[in-house]
Length: 319
Ligand code: F6P
Image (cartoon, rainbow, N blue to C red; front, side, top):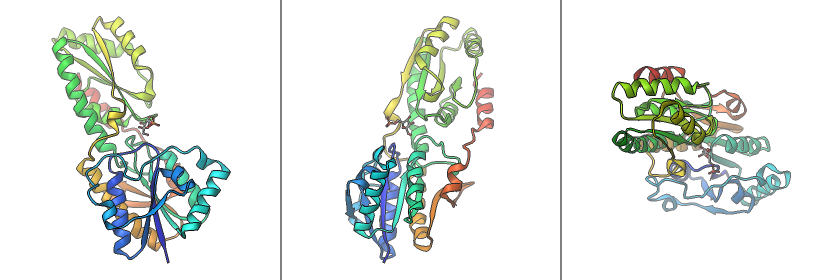
């Protein structure tokens, strides 16, 4: 008899709870026992496993974070930690595991699948840095939070006639900066995927100022450099009073958007249906509006592409 477990791992993302709820309820629908593993791979190693029932996941779809808890586990990549995790799964008779998380977590899922456990990975990360899916769950909520913050920052920036460098998350990926930059009407974005000339950005700000513009918003992806150093140089070149806002963890929390709830519910449901019919390791993906699966090894080799067209649009409409 199959037994399924679910764990969430890495940085939490809004929509994790929608996934957990869908996985638990779908498994129960098919008459399968379902277990929740607390605190990601750390909890798996330590045997923090608990059977979940219908009501275990009641009233969670609207909540940010993850009710299972999460972690970044150094121990799981050690031989000893990994074997301990496998022993825990054996002890509970769990043969199928659903892992929700970003790149590092899905690499852990691949390792699990190579040891004979049936695994499905679900892309859950605010960063949207996974090449095998057009969007990761959590991204749309995060860019909405960032866009709302930009609107607030714009009010005060405009009132004072200043510039503001808004630093956003995303590791080596510029998608949070790009999408929220478009939605928030930013003048410039600085992302790890593209080279920039500070003199060009400064020139644009001076032209805008001479035309009567009273704000200049620059969205800087965390992986693209040091926001304070950039702001200092920008102020020197333009003479515009320049502030820095580092949005930090506010971007990761909050009630998931409708899109993230629907993506989470759909992927959670399809992941269980898939894992009951198939063996081997897979990931869920959304491509051109449809939910798809890819073998996990192939998926993790797919390169993440920066949207050059959207970046060009931002440049044209932000003069
Ligand atoms: O991967 C999600 C993310 O929020 C990144 O954007 C950020 O760089 C990182 O996690 C922060 O991780 P931690 O919670 O470990 O500080």
